[in-house]
Image 1: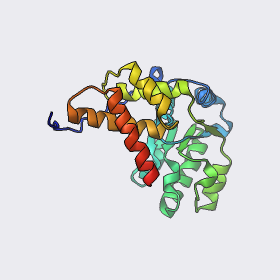
Image 2 (image 1 turned 120 degrees about the horizontal axis):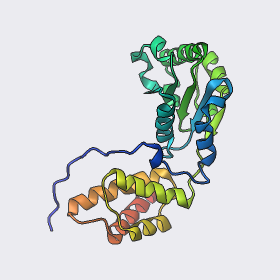
Image 3 (image 1 turned 90 degrees about the horizontal axis):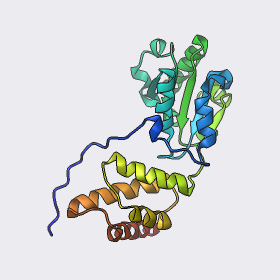
Length: 229
């Protein structure tokens, strides 16, 4: 069968509380997020690898607090005085490291939020002491902030995240394919994102549902690429 045309359709990511799966690897961070009113100095840093659920938890927290969630890299485009009045989440904070203007804006915003008594949630993929911030005053504020960490996923969470990512793409997946992937894939959220994307793309190309045979081919390609690189 000839390959079909493939269109890039939007992925409808579900970010509701009911769509977030709690397991032993994230239960501690979830409890801390849910008890945001008890955060020391009313601020928290949430860390975890890409795809671990940081944005999902941030979305849940923003909804709980009726707050605002923005990417830290866009701070130059935002009215700091306005957004400092209510609960605020700054995502991808480590990405501003090395940009003196952005760091200065972040420092000013941090102080405004604290002065206004609003809670502040900061997210990043790595632990704060690896962010290489240039501004000493900002660095001291970050170092004085409590940290909640999303741990490496267990099998229960990997299974849930796999199913969720297929659901986000409106794909009905055979449970046998999920089992096959879990038994052979790299144990990471990044691997899940890659595999789901490749399976979706290749299934569309051949015009057939995702099967164990296709999963085997994608896994073989994934591991071969990893060896070469």
